[in-house]
Image (cartoon, rainbow, N blue to C red):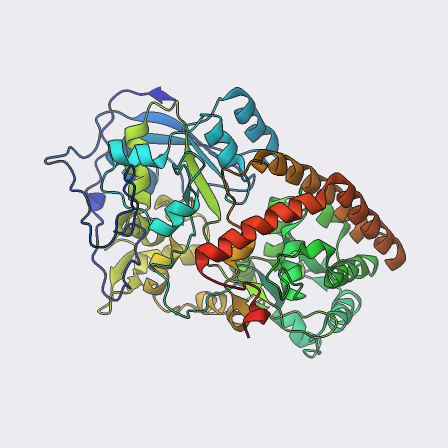
Amino acid sequence: MAIRKPLHLLLAVVLTASIALAGCTGGGAATNTEAPAPDAEKPATAEQPAAEAPAEEKKGYDDIIDIDWYVNLSWWKYSGDWGNDMFSKYIQENFGLNINFITPAGDGADQISAMIATGSVPDLVTVESWLDYKTKLAQGGYLISLNELIEQHAPTWKPYEDIFGWYKEADGKTYASPNFAYSRHAMKPGEQLEPNSGFTLRSDIYEQLGRPDISTADKFLDALERVKNEVKTYDGKPLIPMQLYEFTQNGNQSVNWLTEYFAVPYEDASGKQLNRAFQPEYWDVLKFLNEAYRRGLISQDNFTDKRDQINEKVASGRVFASLTAPQDFTQQFRTLWEADNNAKYEGFALRNYKGDDPVLTDIRGFGWLVTLVGKESKAHDRIAKLLEFLNSKEGQHIAHFGWEGITYNYNADGTIAWTEEYTTTIAKNDGSEKKWGMGFNLQMDWYSVKDLFPKPEAPFDVYNAEIKKPLVQYSYDTSANGGKPNPDHPDRNKMLELGNRLSLYWGKELPRIIMAGSEAEARAIYDETLRRMDEMGQKDLDAYSNESFQAAKEALGVKHSWPPLLK
């Protein structure tokens, strides 16, 4: 981190973006009064007024500090043109920070391990919420807690009480600020949200086939076979019947999601958590993938491709069906549609061989990524204010919508309407929208703004907004399955290490199972993998995970989490 010479970046159009919205639900903004008082025994409540900002507090800085922000995703890219776009200039002018984003070449394990081993931690670190890097870095004394940052530098920042408490560590402090988290204080009772995942297929190619029955796994494979043998190519290139996410050293997210489509249970009738990989229904998941591979319906490249390569294949129209998060490929869908208005994707509910309805996890939860602050950073005061801003109503609006009068205006009902300049620029699809820097997602609170977007009108936007709609009826709150670990558990570190070893072993064996030359060979590798995992201590880890599962259900006030048990 370095301090640079004074720099004045005057932007009259961004002097303020603080907006009072009509139509928002109570607590819908990322910042609200349902928050913990950083060093108080009891959390603040709605009845406790937010602390007032110091009188005549100076806004903006006369100098710019360079900081490093590590993002543990090889494929993540800043959405604008940092240093030249409006968003980054706003950050520089108002928070005195110039950010150098760093991403790993691979899955980030080596970089994070080096941080833990050496204590050399960047100013900001963003990692996946389900990985335990946040706890290891906190226990190593390499992070400053949000409690301290809030008390010392951002007393008006009031994170949601339940989310803040969820990430509390053994020392009673919270170090992680998540994105895409959903607070019970903001959710509408009984609301059913979209799933994160989405099985999608090319509607136009499906139409060419006569929209055959794909209601069960075997019928779907037969349809993929027809794509391979009858349609064969698109734009002169061989079609890929089914595309999965990239394989990592820990496995494959598409395979994890396939367990939801195949309705593999994670809880029994007694309330005990089940390890899905050891359930009889899980074999059907692997059998399906192995058969797809042996029939040439999954490309050999899928086992080595990284996200950029998968992006290119989707954008080129070569992918017929995929099991991913469709929102990850919006730009690729747009590129394809711009080239061919008939080339559209639709969501569908893949089912297991018996035809059971899928049981999908909705986007509700305690976060996708979490951001941590390095203890040795020299910019704690500015970082605290930046994080408060990014989690505020003002920050969320700039990140999602840009600037009033430039990229959007308000409708009478409080929703936004895109300006002609914005829609014209987006329609060019040439990257010129980077001038605004909209779409910064490392602290996004999607729920707080999702109902403010205008109803889609442009043809692509209308189609893209509908992709996952057929899946909502199968989407449920399964938050408890992620568990609520006890930071004081005497075996916590031991179990984390065991979990890492087992995950790496599974990640190594999974491709071997899928690529086996016969169903019998795949089954033999699978059985041997489970046997070996038992030898490595899987039952101990499952018992530990079940404790965490029970704690999560208790915290959420539910007896069961597996949706079929609630009917």
